[in-house]
Image 1 (cartoon, helix red, strand yellow):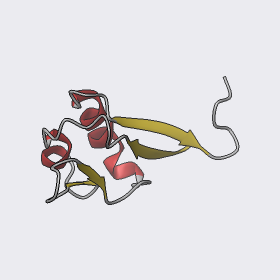
Image 2 (cartoon, helix red, strand yellow):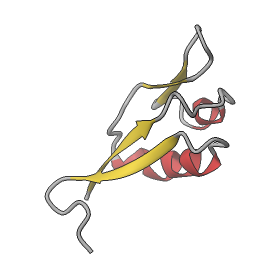
Image 3 (cartoon, rainbow, N blue to C red):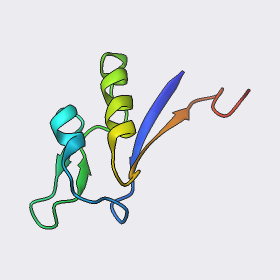
Amino acid sequence: MSWEIRVDRARCAGSGLCLAQVPAVFDQSDDDGKVLLNTPAPGPALAAAVRAAAGRCPSGAITLHETGPDAGRA
């Protein structure tokens, strides 16, 4: 299974928790303090950290989505 990260900058509260948790994937804009995505599809080694960062996002601006031929199948 492959997955990608999506960020909703309109929802972002600019807390920086994601950047603190996974700086290889997330950054924060110098202009407005909102999340920037450095790596939309990080490798499996970062999966647990990215899931944790998404779960801790106070505004729910970070979501994870399955990609590939089996995405969305139950």
